[in-house]
Image (cartoon, rainbow, N blue to C red; front, side, top):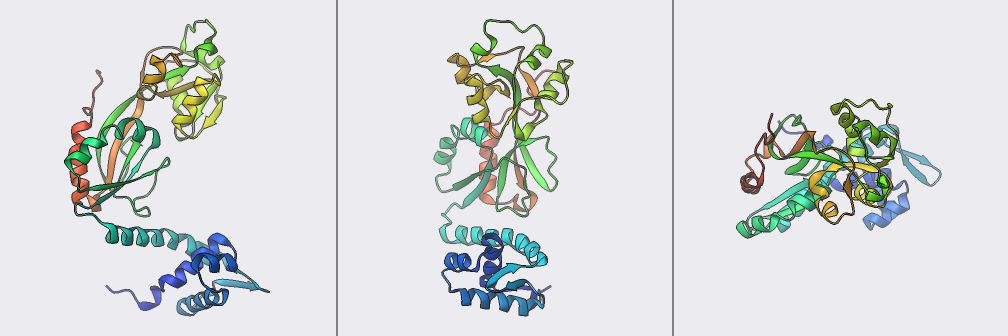
Length: 303
């Protein structure tokens, strides 16, 4: 079914609307789009006429968006980004194709990057473009062909390949223990706890696993990435609960020590995830087949 022309505004007018929502100044929009202010005004007027809806509030010489127009601008922003990504991919697409991949920064740096040279050697004609994403996202509104993410495989409409399960260690600077010995898991609650934003429940889950009675909610400071929380632990700011593979070097160099206990399995695992609509993408198929050779078994831990 073809879409009526009315509902397919020009890219130029949509860019003007999106930019005005973001920049909140007609002069700033004109500078960004390399237009005059009168040209920007004409683009917006044309969009209003085509849609048959008032979009712009005009107060003296200032332009702003109506509430409905602001909602509209938020929705078209992602679409404009997708068009730009698709156009870029079309113009610079190498012979073997490209793969737009979202990754988690710490896992990408420590696990994926050391392995990628082998993929590049086996598939020199495929280009992988990577972008770090800390939060879950929707493939429908983000221009990714696949993502490496952590979770419990509850992503509707996707295919997935488990890459690695995760075991956690409570680690801290040796000086934080000051020669003392923690006798039980609950003793950790007496030390400053460092939390990671993307896994705000990790410490509570850890204490529950060890049947430790601790105050709720747990106090402590919050960090947005493992790289920063590890540095905070190294400098004695508290105890961090982190994946063991991220601190192997720091433990070997004795910059960090295990505060108490043995590694415990985290809830969830690292997965390669892709939208079902892109499952037949040749670049994705090649990457997925290779990545399967790097992945650990589905359930490597004894039960």
